[in-house]
Image 1 (cartoon, rainbow, N blue to C red):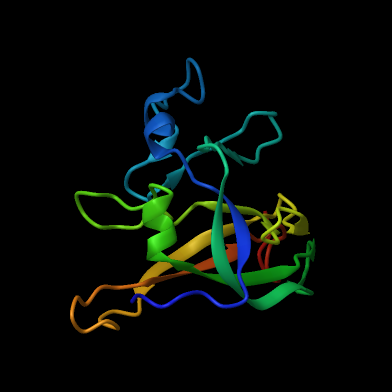
Image 2 (image 1 turned 90 degrees about the vertical axis):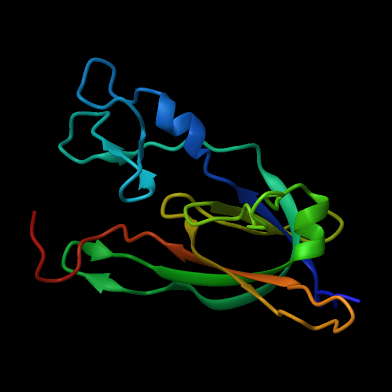
Length: 180
């Protein structure tokens, strides 16, 4: 008995492929040898269109649809900046470890969920597969925290049963007082 999700939807998650990023050279003859920064644990920025602003290089695994509970905090709430508007969004999704295990999204050696910081939410679907809410990218919604929870609910064989993943957007404008 591990409990269950209530009011289920399907989250379309695009997991960041850090292994491919780490070995692919994103800037050709430039100084970079890989597209993933091991110190900051995120994709590097490369100016691909010579506008002086680095674009995030991403490689993703194929999208996977995972049963979840949806707990929205904010969705495109207006945030005004000197350089424009940057709508703020935050959505929390609750995943059941039984579903993650069934889909091969739990590392067998460590027990860690394979939903990790940097993964992107593409859309939310109903259980029949119909689109409920697409997520515009950019700005996109990305995992900023993946926290296992619900430990020890079944006393004969205590286990964790839930993963709470927080998806936040990325700012598209500079805050007031910041100039380039």
